[in-house]
Image (cartoon, rainbow, N blue to C red; front, side, top):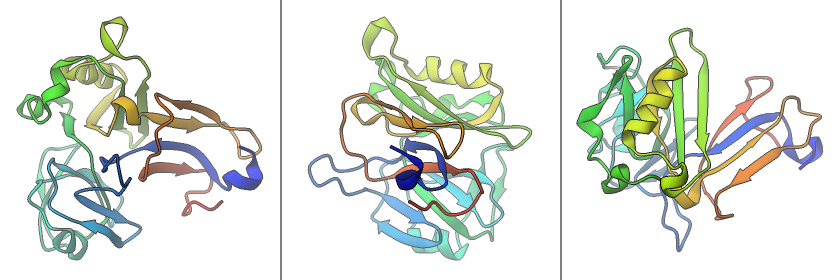
Length: 208
């Protein structure tokens, strides 16, 4: 993919869980201040508030209440409850792995396959505000990651908050250094993915 079709995008990584037959996102999805899906989430929700702070909301949270700032969420970097902040972006993955630089063991049974070694997609933040996407390509005992592996990999990379996005057969990441470069693309199966976390060269909404 060239610059002409990639716009200002530098990194794009698959994010939320979805129906693999209809490819529709499930749970709560908010993009750029607009509600995309508003069904009850099955797992804690990754959220971004109006000030750009990341954290997670309870799976019982309603999309409209998150958007309006009438429900609370947990700041991933401090572990503190935040109230009165509008959520501008949200996606339902599988839940926190690291909170406030500590392994979030209370979520290790959030998904039954956390004991299995799978391809994984992780979103992290560092203390200095740097964002990190960790993509583990391998499946099975030859190199796939379980919950502990994900937590250790995140902490080793300096992440104080880490959240497990959709992985396994949905794992997909495309990166390039400049907008003039072609994308370096990895997909675990070539499956279509409906939601992505995107980093742009100019910090503006993605264009293509």
